Image 1 (cartoon, rainbow, N blue to C red):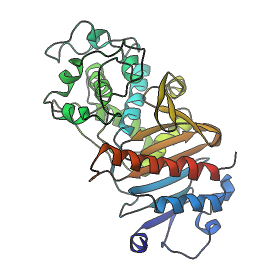
Image 2 (image 1 turned 180 degrees about the horizontal axis):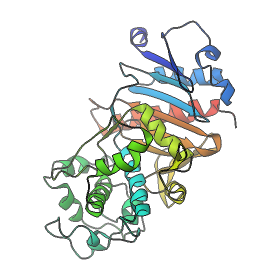
Image 3 (image 1 turned 45 degrees about the vertical axis):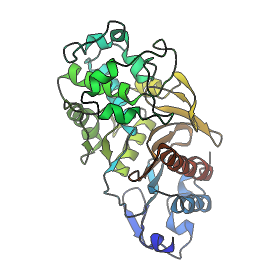
Length: 359
């Protein structure tokens, strides 16, 4: 473990400049996190949170921003500030943002629009009952279609290898009435990317570059595509941790960036408010908005984007706080291993970082 720590690259962030410090530096927390106390963060508790992070298997980055100031930033296990990370299901929250923008721009007219409005030209068949699934159902994970993912089932891999990821989803059997029950569904989220492409006439990544990434100054991205060339809506986006912070800060600012509105304020509020109960599908995430998890911990409300094995953008509005993590995922032998890594990372955030922030 000592050798691993010696190879870590550690950074302390200020408003503009980042000062790199050697790991094992003898200075105290108040020196390492110079901007923390000025922004109402207990540096001793913050140091304890970072110490926990250094002991957490697989974590690659931990960034803490308060009041628009990046007060702490550290990378682990060979990761660095310019590392482009696969953020897995954080992609879903990006699709939520893009859907809100598309509604505001008039490419979409309502969350009551259905699969039947978009998919018939591009699928072999769309059963009439499946055609009634709405955008709202996709955004709230209430399609009613059978899907086994959070329960450890192997349906995700079956879907990815199906040869037609769009048709696979619309052919799924029913397990509930649409709109009634939260059922986590990466395949359903993917359909939002397909719909966005059909509605706008441009690819999801190009739409994102024009309306979201470009205005935020996010230039270095990558994104997987499905077998037909549509960008995947449920996973597959690659971002740098600092750019993930920008996404969180954008929502903390109610959709405004450098004086320019990027996301409608009403969409920020609606998409991060409770739309459906998850029945505690994941720790700290008892409720769900529009592809954002809504939770509570350490006496504070927050919402978060989260991805497989420990990718997070957590926003605590009352604390003016954004916390970002990335985590390694390759080589995990089972869903249980990935879940354990995920749990370890979110524990650092909720039970480590949040207690250091003064209300």
